[in-house]
Length: 322
Ligand code: UFG
Image (cartoon, rainbow, N blue to C red; front, side):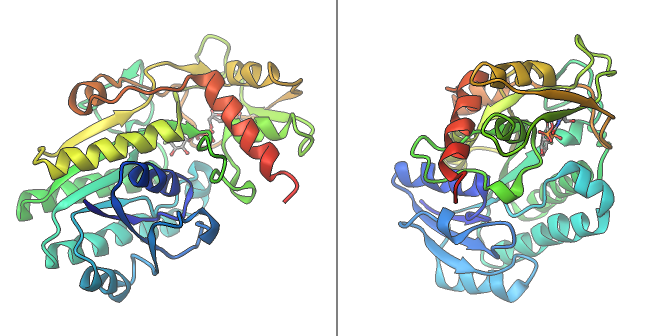
């Protein structure tokens, strides 16, 4: 397969490129390097610098490459930032996908793997199933849901086939430690907690301990980025082999509170924790059912929370003096 990975120089995109290349696929990357890094680009991938919101940039790739499957990772994804800057999220996340779909359609490329998010579920109670009602509580989730709907209408009109993946909380780094989440991009819990044990910050602030959960802190479902990436490879094969359109959660089916994550980090080295106020846009609990991913794609995550935390620790130590 020839796979176009849009956003392949970013954190999740680069891990997916690594898994595709391990699977002997040919990889083309389109990235504007707004939050991606040239050094995360796999040496065997072909790189195009360009922005998916600029139609000529996207056309340039499709004119030169005969693409089988497109994967999209080029999104803004920080929940609190989306609350402060909703228009930037609509422009980048929705307009970018609209342009990409338009060019795909014009070039008769009709297989699409799209990164969506658990944030489409909003305040879910219990375990999230894919057919549950979607009700985002922040602009990030709204923009991803708008894309999901756009993709499904395009599929209806133009015989597209898609796999939409709804990610839960992604962390960790490839075992090679050549790629990972860079240190100027940290807003997520696990890397911030790890920074608290490697001397970069002196404590972790927990955003609220008055949620209706077992210890008052938010519950999330953590998934290793390499497990997430390998699901994309399975998704591409599934579409290439004629699979029908599906929306699929990617998570571990297990929830951990913020305090439990802090405890897992504390087992590597002592972590000081301070309780702060709630953060805007945070639902109390998000846990995936991953039964559909297992059934349709035969996907089984390999890593547990302790592996994810250790993997992020190893990567952060490696890049700490750069
Ligand atoms: N948190 C802290 N302190 C921090 C950072 C985070 O207490 O310093 C808490 C948050 O308040 C939240 C939990 O840790 O309760 C996880 O927060 P993250 O920022 O790590 O991740 P989010 O749950 O906000 O968002 C992530 C992705 C979204 C996705 C969501 C799905 O960024 O794309 O997971 O669960 F939708």
